[in-house]
Length: 155
Image (tube, rainbow, N blue to C red; front, side, top):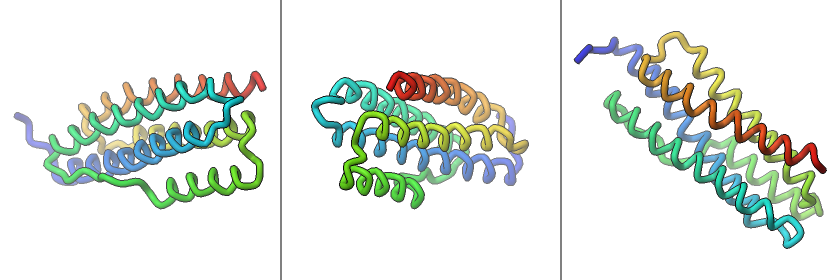
């Protein structure tokens, strides 16, 4: 087994933990959006639940990667993610729960997670195994973003 430099291991663990939080935020956000949908938008529930499941699957792989680095994985969501979900709540209270508004907010969230993965992959100290994991997850995130954007554009 090749021993990784301590700094690379710590940096990788920090990045992976950030992505765990963001994926937890994303899963919670899509679950919240699915729960808040009215009957007219019920067709989006399956899509939102599928995207929440994608993030839960991402988290499982990220937690395993943190463990391989002998780190302690994050278990919660980020403060900004909580604010994002709160914004959805406020918007729903003021009648912003129409299909286009929901999809616009979901796309905003997808833009944020795409940026987080892009930033993580720009890190030069990321170990090769973690880099490959993030590249694989990034492809799925990009495809999901495109799905949300396509749904929004048809409104």
